[in-house]
Image (cartoon, rainbow, N blue to C red):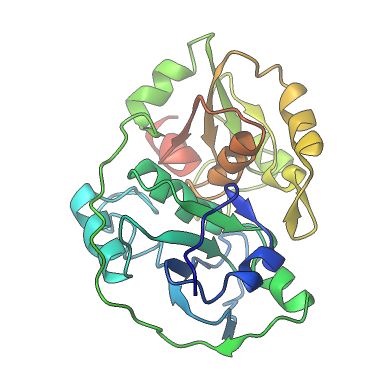
Length: 275
């Protein structure tokens, strides 16, 4: 089959079905359980030709104090090559919730210098709802790729950065957690973690960018950002542990807001290190 080229950072299930057998296409399942759920939600099916993108282990620094910490260039290079990623690849990443952890995988690729990556709008639920073919989960391993990661220091904020951003009038920290968690009205799902929010931060629950399993229209996304007067500000996205903050980052890119970063440790780190 011919090689693919991505139209934008979000592709439809119809687009993926039409390009499923393209030579340079890699499909990654970045599913992970929601921290707010007690269930061990394991989907037994996958889109054909899928490989598993293991955010928790392969693509996080597991020696770090907080969950989902961004890995080193060396680790990202090794694990991406193991999945067959080369400079000529294009990548579509999805998850089994619709839009949840797939955006984290998309953002990691962008942060490490790989641009030809998109999220599957609606993920596996939308694929199944359209009656497209699935297979039982298997590895679908590839030959090692040649991609070399180069970390963009501007892509992520860390604890010291976020203390400065919270005082910077040209920065705006936007929290993707639910309104009740943001306001401290609902307990944090991680045991022992205090409730609250980062000083001077505002809230767009990630669910406000979604319509069912898929993203809202560009107009619907823009409405959420416009309500917070985000124009001409550097946007810093936070959440519980750096996963759903990336949904806001993807939403921002869909409406052409590119002066953005993600707070890697998010509230899990900030709430632990401050009183």
